[in-house]
Amino acid sequence: MIRILIIALFVLAHAPQPAAREAATPRLKELVTVTADVVRIGDLVEHAGPAANVAVFRAPDLGETGSVDVGRVAEALKPHQIANLDTAGISQVVVTRLSRAIPAAEIEERLADAFAGQFGLGEARNLSITTDRPLRALHVEASATGELAIARLNVDQRSGRFDVQFELPGAVAVRRAPLRITGTVIETVETVIVARALSRGDTVKASDLVVARRRKSDFLNGAIAAGEAVGLAVKRPLRTGEVLRATDLMKAEVVRRNETVTILYRVPGITLTVRGKALEAGAIGETISVTNVQSNRTVQATVEAPGLVVIAAPIPVVTAMTPVVPIAPAAIPEAPVERPAPVELPSLPLAPRANLIAPAPAAVPQMTLAPPMPPSQVPSLGPLALAEALALSPTPLIEMPAASKTPSTQ
Image 1 (cartoon, rainbow, N blue to C red):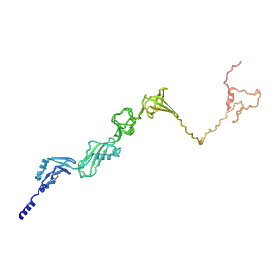
Image 2: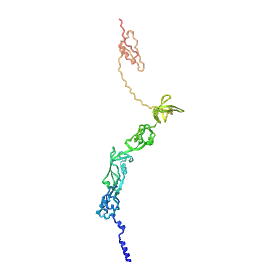
Image 3: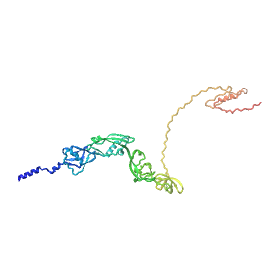
Image 4: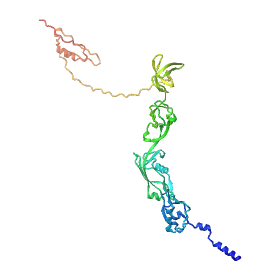
C-alpha cells in the first residue's frame, strides 16, 4: 500500500502541468506597438523564444498604424521554427509605431516667435502665417526630447515670403528628412466689420458690428474701435462684411431736411419760441439754416435736440483792463551827419560901373549906394550890365519882367 502511494506521488510530481504547457505555447498578439522602424518576431508573438529579435516586417511611419493578415504572419514565422502558433482566432494584427507628436499649432507658434520684432513685423500675437502646404503634426522618435529650433530663416520684407528650416536634437527622422516650411507672414490688426447691410443715415448698434483681423498695412489710417462707432450714423451705404472706417461715420442726424422744428430764442431772462423749417439736416451741436415760418426769414441755429434748434444771443464778455505801463524809449544813437566840405567859389568881377557891396551873411542883403554924383556924370546901364548886376545878388530883390519891344519914335 505504501509502495503504491509513493509511485502515485512520483507520477504526479513529474507529470506536465497545464499552465506551464500553456505558457510555453507561442501566442499571436492582436495589438502591437513598436518604437523602431522594423517589427520583430518578439513584437508579434508571445514566448517567441530565441527568434524574438528577428525582424520580419517594416514598421509603419512614426505615429502611424498598419495591419497585417495572420496568414502573412504565419508565413513569415515558418523559417524561424515557430511551431504550434496559437492565433487565438484573430484575422489581422494591428501594428502602431509610437512617436512624439509636435502639433501644428506649436510649429506655427515657433514661426511667429522667430518673426516677431524682425523684418518690420510687430508682436507674435499680431502675426498671421499662411503656409504653402497645410501644417500637420510632426512625429519624431519617442526618445527625442529636445526642443524644435530654427536652423535657417529667410524673409522677404516687402512681400512677406519666408523660407524656414527646423532642426530637433536627437530626432533621427528630422535629420533624415529636414522639416522645411515656406509661406507668407503679415502683420494684422483688429478691425470692425459690418455684420449687416446699413443704409445712409442708419445709427450703428453694437449688434451691427463684429471684430476681425485684417492686414495692418491696409489700415494705417481711418481705423476705428467698435465702441467708438456705436451711436454714430453711416455716411454711405455699407455691405455685409465690409470694413468700417472712421471716414464712413458721422454724428447721428436728429434733424432732417425740410423737417418742422421749434426755434428757441434764448437771452438772459427771456425765452421765445417760434415754429420753423429746417433747410438742412444736422446732428446735435451742428449749426444749420432754418426758416422762421412767420417772418419768412432764414437764420442760423444750433441743433440741441431732435426737432429743437436754439438761437442764443451773444453775451458780451467784459475783461479787466490792464494798466499800461509807459516804457521809456530806448536811446537811439544819433547817426553822424556828414556835412559837405565848404566849397570856395571863385570871385566874379563886378560890372564895371555898378558899385555894389555884398551884404553880410547874417543880415538881409542891402545895397549901398555911392555918394551922389552930378547928373551929368551918372553912367547909363545897358541891359547886359543890369542883368549881370542882378545875377550877383544871392537873394534877388527884383524880378525883371520879360522885355517888351516898344515902337521907336522917329
